View (cartoon, rainbow, N blue to C red):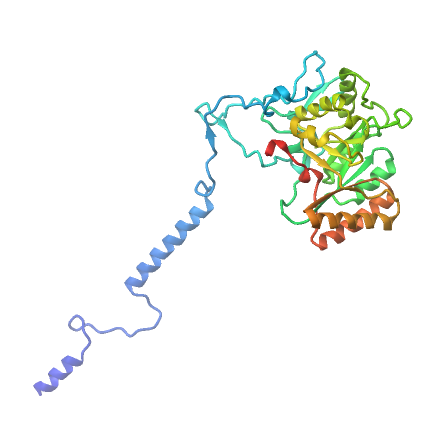
Length: 391
């Protein structure tokens, strides 16, 4: 009997005397499991709060250094650089020393260093309005200038692009403003990646400039320069000439630059003789460098001094590889654009120029869409400019 009782005691579950074991329902949690769940929940909540708060851990702090309040003159060996046109007060200067304001938040008298390779473009919603820091009022209208912080019209008004290393083609269509119908057609039909060049002697330029900028186009301004056989061949009003004095050419240039705003640079209109004359061309290029403008050469003169002077005067520089509409037929323009594509695939990029003829606008509109599908990127001309200030 005692042996049977002992056997029953052995078969009982462990626990307090007389305690009955509850049947397992399969749904309950032990204390340990509850603790683990609470700890896991707390970790999830903490992680979410960190992710949703402001991110001081992911944004590197602003770089502030203590340096003198002025930046070195942008032109190394400035004494040897060509002088710009004399100002109305009689003084002359090349690229100006840029004053960099002290950082208001730094608290230590330092200056904020910005990445010079990063372009600070306009908000697209106001791209048709001039940046007030980049213009100066004059008797000729609003003239482009460098901002106090060093920004240039070339930087701010440039159209953004991908920055990829593939084959790139810049297409520049000029003569806008001459024909109202042609100008309207070019702005409405051409892809926004195409750069538009406005003729300084055109009509309603400010209205057309605003329409072009609102459509996303980068723009340049065509400046009339003296060709051979001038005045039999006449580029038009305010042509800069070899025989004119520095002050007269300055006034003509200012009258041209003041026609519109929001352009990245200028492009020669004719100028076969002017761009080969060092005495006349040097102060012109120095003035562009002083004002932060690009120079686009249409490629018509093999003897141009532009590449050499652009380096000395710190002017962003680009040159056309070919003209696409020497024959004003749709098929001929398409063939020239195919030549531009082959050039881009061979050397990485190409610059093609044309005029706002109906055949040119139609052909460029069709070709640009097809070229994109073939892996060609259509870029603004500023993307292909050599910029001495970044070298």
